[in-house]
Image (tube, helix red, strand yellow):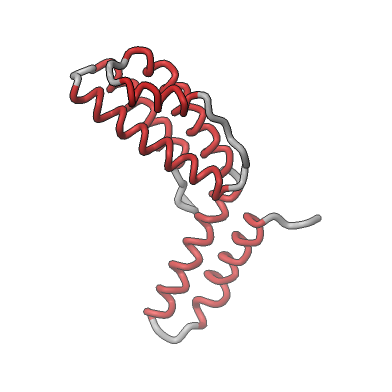
Length: 145
């Protein structure tokens, strides 16, 4: 069996907390080691789902852009939304997915500003629903709770 990164991080965090931290001389060093172990546990949790989360977020934003674009009066924003809606992932590397996600989020902000200025409450609700789904997907569970 070849251990995956999440397993390595989890085991390392467990060893750091259970074996090494109690041997450290002062509370600052113990606190620092505990914080590092906690971050390792959260990183382990993120490892297995990172690409899936980002790909789904990108697809959801593109779908929203496709439905919103025809309703806009701003020709430039409409074109940007249509172009983004037709985009697709060129790589499943986290760095590439993040870069695309950041680009789409900036466009989502522009769309949100537009619908807010136009008092389009239905479109604003769609955007907030999308943002909630995105936040729910990224939710990290605190180990032990």
